Amino acid sequence: MNKRKKAISLGLAAVLAFGSMACGGEENAPKEPFVPQIVGAYEAEDAVHAGNVKVVTSGKTGYSGTGYAEGFIDDGTDTCTFKVEVAQEGFYDLNFVSASSGGNKDNFVSVDGESAGIISVSTKEFSDSVLHRIYLPAGAHDITVSKSWGWIQLDRLDIITSEPIDPAIYEVTCELSNENASENAKKVYAYLCEIYGEKILSGQYCDDGIYGKEIQVIKKVTGKVPAVLGLDLMNYSPTNVKNGTTGKSIEHAKFYWENGGIVTFCWHWTVPEKYLTGTWYSSFYKEHTNINLSKIMNGEDAEGYDLLMKDIDAIAKELKVLQEADVPVLFRPLHEASGGWFWWGASGAEAYKKLYIAMYDKLTNEYGLNNLIWVWNGQDAEWYPGDEYVDIIGEDLYPGEKVYSSQAASYLNAATNYSGETKLVYMTENGCVFDPELAKRDGAMWGMWCTWVGEFVAKDTTIYALSETYTEEHMLIKAYSDEDVLTLDELPDWK
Image (cartoon, rainbow, N blue to C red; front, side, top):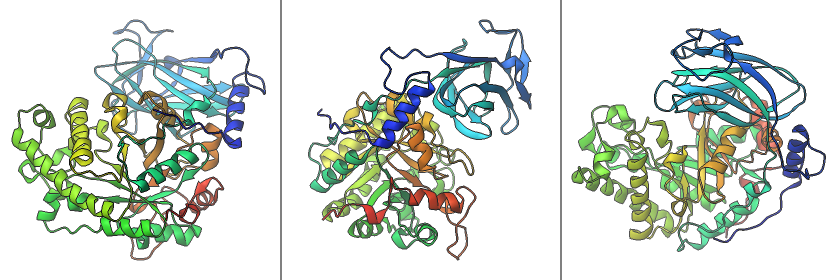
């Protein structure tokens, strides 16, 4: 595919230069190849342990020092905190040498009490698990590993100078996966490519559209309306319709587009009624269903395949309404699959990819839905269906309350480890709105944020009031006022 080459903004150029200086380079680009340097190595047995975490000296081989830490069993209590110090501010890779008790294990990392990302390990031997480009001011820091999945053995933490960001990370592929894409889809996508690395789209999920609570709270506090409206196709699912729901999202999407905005859709897909075992309106969660996607996608459950295709038919009918109104859609189906909490992710990566590709083929080739810009949100490289089915890569991040960091490690992982091409990378769901200044500093230029509904921005009252549980008023105003954050009034005239 052709690449659209575009200049790096002054802000990003400054980030790249700062990254070089922080890693021991000169003000200009280094002439010699970058060589990472370990600036600190900290043994887990010398760290501060809490809860069930303890030092172990036998049972596993291959560790450094005099032992390792294990006992990551209970949520909220089991932690290992490294007391570290860096002499120079800058960007560093945090390498947690660890081993798994069996299978892939993800666990949380925080720096000075603020979420920095997730580390993963799947080998039973001690191996590297790295968070890339974490900004550390000079001085002392607490770096904490806490239980998510747990069940790891933690040997040590190495702090390593980070390689400066390659400017090519923002040179995105600017051809849609669907060669028959509509003119408006092409127009929006070209614009998204043009601004990528320089501007960030503000976004907000709001079930009631432009006049809904969340967007009106944002307008009340900041004076701005988000560039992107997030909506859900859930109430168009046949199981929901049979139980009396009426979808309104299609009309909200048309109105937002007519008023100059961009729309994105997810689909909390409630299962066909045959597979219900619990509450129907929560049956996108695996615990409310007995569906086996592996059997469906490998041909063992032909009836199940037909039922899923009929559900997609129902959604295609609604998306067709938007196509007839010339409304392009950032379409994000089967989201957060690798987390395993939704039924479409509960049977593993292979079944999921087969379903994603089948949906892509049905909507694109059978229904001719050329208004869709496909957003993949599987959140793990093993779950990536292939570049030919993906236009934008999405990450959903909920790092906690009042966490305004850029989540650079997650951004770089998504930008470099999923696709064989250079794709746009968006924060497709978030709890806290990140600080745009930190995103620019860190080189984590997410193309968009899109905050989830309810308490993440609005209090659960009839009064349209800001909830500051996740994002405080001063940060919301700062984010929406940033010169590099785009709001509804700053988008092009699509007509």
